Amino acid sequence: QKEVEQDPGPLSVPEGAIVSLNCTYSNSAFQYFMWYRQYSRKGPELLMYTYSSGNKEDGRFTAQVDKSSKYISLFIRDSQPSDSATYLCAMSDRGSTLGRLYFGRGTQLTVWP
Amino acid sequence: EAGVVQSPRYKIIEKKQPVAFWCNPISGHNTLYWYLQNLGQGPELLIRYENEEAVDDSQLPKDRFSAERLKGVDSTLKIQPAELGDSAVYLCASSRDQINNEQFFGPGTRLTVL
Image (cartoon, rainbow over all chains, first blue to last red; front, side, top):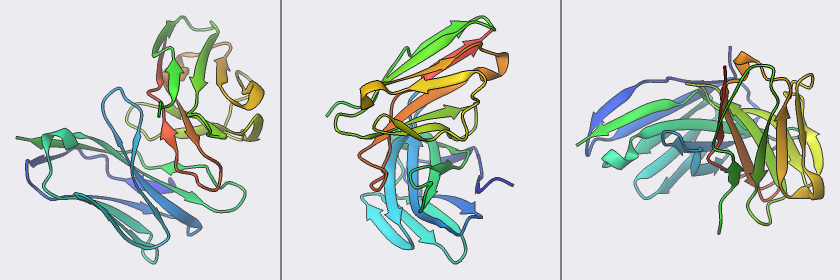
């Protein structure tokens, strides 16, 4: 079992829809949680960065972390065709391996006009 | 602010040949990472540098892979000899330091081994 599990999709939604993406993890030591967006043939781009539990909002994007359930989510409101990409969750623990990111396999999202 | 620069963007080689990838991190970022990304998978860490010191290379296949970061700025990742299974995207990332580990990625080098 991988440390981070993420449904690869694909997920296809109409423009304007609310998108929900999520990941589960097994390592209770994870403290830092991130969402990356990766366009085809590009490197991952950091979208959201949160520490420990709670919510964080940035424009149309909201990240949620539930450490008790080992579950994180990314919500995209008013989705746009330009949001079409692969979304990767990533997380990191503290201690000697601080800095190593453990990634999910990514969810491929298509937003159609 | 310029992003992480990688070259080449694409590389096609025959198996058993050597190959090298180059990365220049964001200016002022002390921590540099090399990741491997297979098709349909998330990136997996190969090696992490703090300045010129490799502080986490436990995932680097040392029989054929090597890396260096002389002077603690740009870095080179080498494979010798390459195998068919090495076909993947090699990503470089950097962060300001290991405490503030917001990592910023380069575009990657797509390697095809024939």
